[in-house]
Image 1 (cartoon, rainbow, N blue to C red):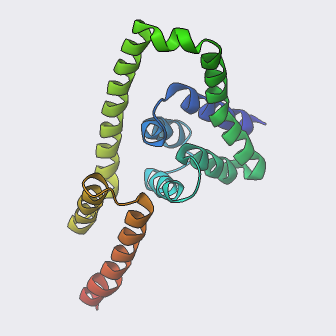
Image 2 (cartoon, rainbow, N blue to C red):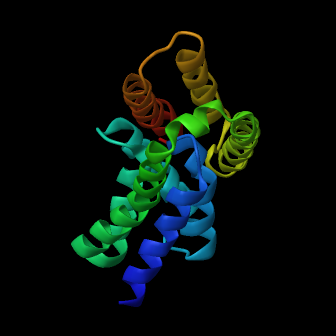
Length: 182
């Protein structure tokens, strides 16, 4: 029962304390899953996150389901997912009850502006620290740079970028690295 409670509370905190979707939740995912509970290593979190980005559904929920399943089977996946969505359901319900007051309140608008700035800073910090730890070698940095350019400048769909990067990585490692090793 302890693992179920830990899964629920970890993902409840992630779901309740982050705003802005999957990328904004990445710092909290890293803290709770990698640093606090040691359920995954950083490279595995990145892999899960990339797969969650390519599969249908919300990235954070896909990640919660996977981590919960890995730690405690099907019930763990269910508990982690419920933990992730519960804060949103509560917040959305409360917001819907007093929507007009929230929309028109100048203080709420200022608070949201501040939250957006913090979320951007946290995302940049996480991308930087994860990039330093997971991008090994010049070729990985080149793939990362081209992937960023494809997404940012050319609006290439994420799935296409991930698939292309995977194919390029396979080709590079089989034909270039493999040939040099032989």
